[in-house]
Image 1 (cartoon, protein in one colour):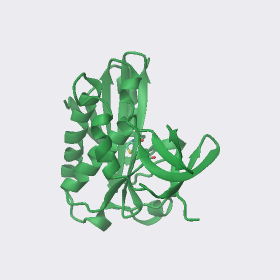
Image 2: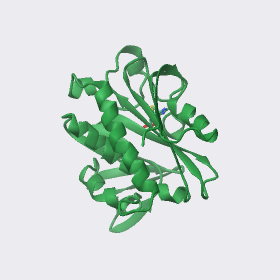
Image 3: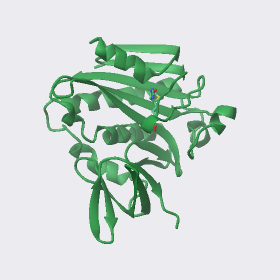
Image 4: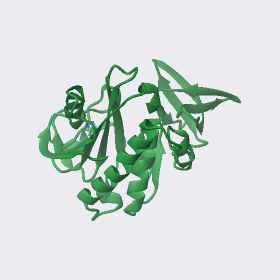
Length: 248
Ligand code: BTN
């Protein structure tokens, strides 16, 4: 499944590089790891701080036919695969925060950014980008605007290369099963696993979505990966937004 593995010292963004390759029809099955990104991208237009050798910055390019709807819930399934890879290395207390953060001990350990290319109706490309904090220090750590944690503080001594390989070994088959016909197709095969790792299950949360704010109790996700909020007995589904715990 892996056609090429590119390891670089420094790039702007591994996601940007693989999007360019997909546009040239040369990105399928290509994975890129970078020690440092000068313009690492996060969700919702944020930047992803990636100083030299402080994390795993990984992107995978994947091309498929059948339309973008095949990717429904993929970012959540990617979270499940990452959680499994981390558990394989003995990382404790791994949880998932909707839609696609990996948390550990109440703070963010890794983030996922999916970016699309192609006409989206039939032939599509997707770049799955993963940023995992391994050992953050100093000024760059201080610049992160959300509660974070790194691998060194929960499980020191993990070999980054082995962990990156374990992530690839899980993510490539996941991309294939998502985009090729078969029993494992789509999010339903991953939903129970996601629910078992849900960081906010049953907790009071606030969802910021399209300049509105909604409050309710987190009640898991549906078979498409949409967030379910219980609001005074009424259930509402959300397909996008930012969730935080409500302390009030
Ligand atoms: C998030 O906001 O939580 C998603 C962060 C994704 C960061 C990764 S690092 C590798 C890849 N290249 C990028 O520019 N972004 C993703």
